[in-house]
Image 1 (tube, rainbow over the protein chains, first blue to last red):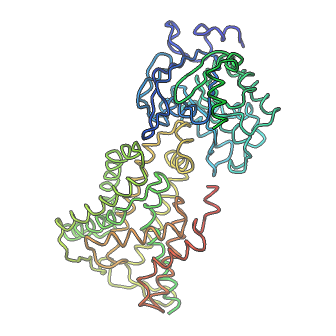
Image 2: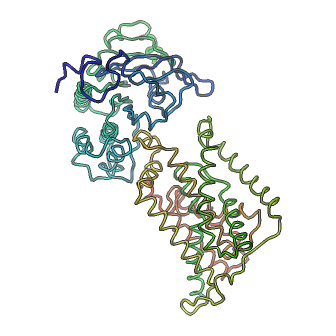
Image 3: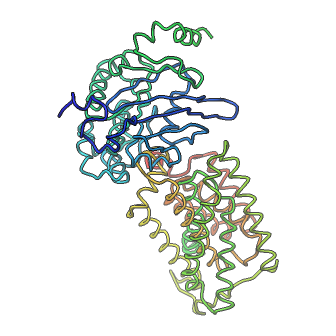
Length: 258
Length: 291
């Protein structure tokens, strides 16, 4: 209904947001650290995300983008730092608890529940997250999968699996949604449709983190991007400014030359 | 002779399906091979033995107690060990070492507790009269074991396909991470699977005196090998495929023992090698890929 209102952070009554009175961010990560053996995948990453905002996360391969999503969603436990949802720390919670609080994510390579139908995949998420099954049809419609509802998830193509993963995440009624590489493998028309859909979600108040290689896609959806390298944020600002930043250019070109 | 072999093979096949069912369920959910599976079967066998010796209970009556004891043991073992294991950098390797160590520890403890003497429960515990099928006489214990095996497979089917927990369990088996972010408590599901897995092993153990021979502390290692073979034949991670694996194994075993008995001990290894060469993903592989 009121996109103008919902864009103003912390004011609107849409959704079931807690802590409207204080100025806590919808999602705040501070000093996130994650090591894999001797490799520092995340090395003190911090960022804030407001209600209805779309934050882009970019950086060369291995810079820690997907690890960020894994740590924030709880699929990996953090070695240091804190994740707060509406001001409340969730760092110690198991992934399913975070899901039930409204924090969800998609996967770069979705692995849907293959033996189940498309409808059942979304239904499982709706049921176990406590969102209730009345959202299922709506989510399938949103992801343009309603006509495939009875198909087995294993028979879907790449683009359909990605949309199913999104529908699955939406069925848990997220307040924060972390999206890992939506653009890879989508054609330009599909990319544009997806960008519109994500913007519409943000207008409804969902805060999104979008990890993306496709710059054009990021430009369509996010006003603010963070560029990562070696587990840290090296730049924060608009996509256009990122392209001008010497450090960002060095990091990306450096990757290309070695 | 052939009729006897086929009916016997069916009964043994159902039983071997039960023997391996818990191993495959645990593997399907946790992606860890429980190398102590056979040792829990051994403990179940001793539990049935002592229930008979001390209270005169038949193995069927002892099942109720085994359900409680071994599912509780599975839950406790899960929460004591697995979350820590999964947090390590190489859970698969560590789990092999850990479950192998557990297997050795259980065998050593069983020797201390029960001694090394083989024990058994008289086959007449289910009555002296043999059961006649197709004109062949079979021990009543074989029939009881077959019926219990079918009942427990049915239980696992209902658990997996007609319960809320089972639906979550299948989701975890299909994709652990997608299950997590669908709001499923993966630890609770896995703990339940290990509880059910140990319970099934122990219940299979209650019939081992009639189906596998005498009960002794070291019997678990061979049982784990057989279970692994049956599981691989029937497709790893596909619990109900275990029944098919069991039938193939049981039928082959009876055929070997009837016509080529000196080779029968080689059977698990021969079948394992054959399946690895011919259908490495298991007989139900194509279905499992979609299930």
